Length: 413
Image (cartoon, rainbow, N blue to C red; front, side, top):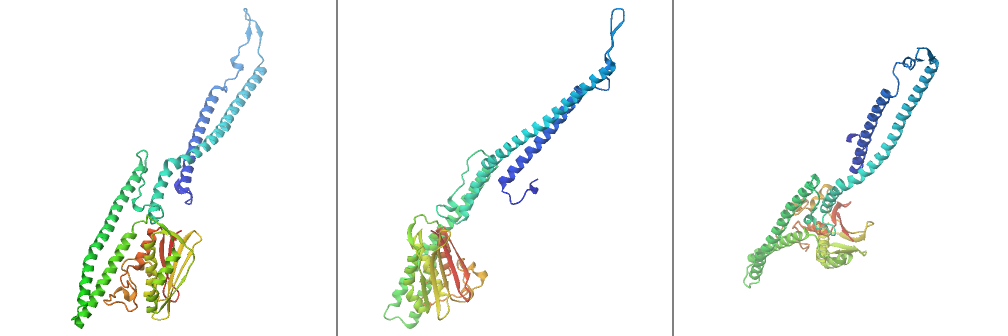
């Protein structure tokens, strides 16, 4: 029967139609059976059989046997027809009244059953399912404002039935996922912190060796190369720490204007952009948000740095603009000139350590000629998306016509 229902109907409408339809069918069957039983009872008790009334009434006589009054057969026949007619009318009226009032009662009770089914389907079945759906939606939305992500539980109370068992199973799955992700984040954070110490020691020893008066040219060249490798590893660890930190929802938020952060970062990168021959242009519009200023500054810095780094050799530009979208969110859009990016690669560049084209295999051991910090690590856009999602937003990219990228970050206002 469910195959006959339109697929566009919600499950609540389907359940109501099924319950109401089953009730009407059962009520109709009961009414038909009652009608048949009443009809059979009336046919057997009220209507005369084949024997006529005249054959059953003897004439009246006295004590000597003299007939005093003989019943007229025509009169008896007329009386019989009248009785039969009255009985037939009574039978038909009774059956018609049964159908009429029974059908009316069935319709009224059926409508009440449909309304009751509509209410009970929401209370008994759909309300717990909606609670499970809402929890899964909030978790899948990426830690929106006020949502605790994988730390949230359904905690459905009530009788032990199939829905409660489903909710408990979902909570157990969330518990395992939460422990797994927390363990992974703790491992990355702890490993990054542990690796920082030997790298700092290496940098100090190399700097001391390079500053000695008697250091040879070969030693200085080797020391410079090792310092570049050490600096790259430090940037990599800093990026891993930022990603691990961004995996958690930002709980402590302050009110900031994203346009002010963009202006500040653009000023900080002005000399770097001039060295690379890239013009940075900023279009500001008031865009108030609530978030972590340090993480938001890291987000903007990575976007502008990425635009400066992956640009044309000369005459390139990076354009950053902020605006409020019609749905109440805040958007940061950074576009830049540069090499052509295939459309199918735009999602892959947000993955950690993913680089496009020749950058996939390049691992420069010297400081970059354009002076852009953090080049070649492969975590820039990964950090951008992680920070955006930690604030309840998201980041997406699309190829720019003529080469380059357009990266749009959306944050809740």
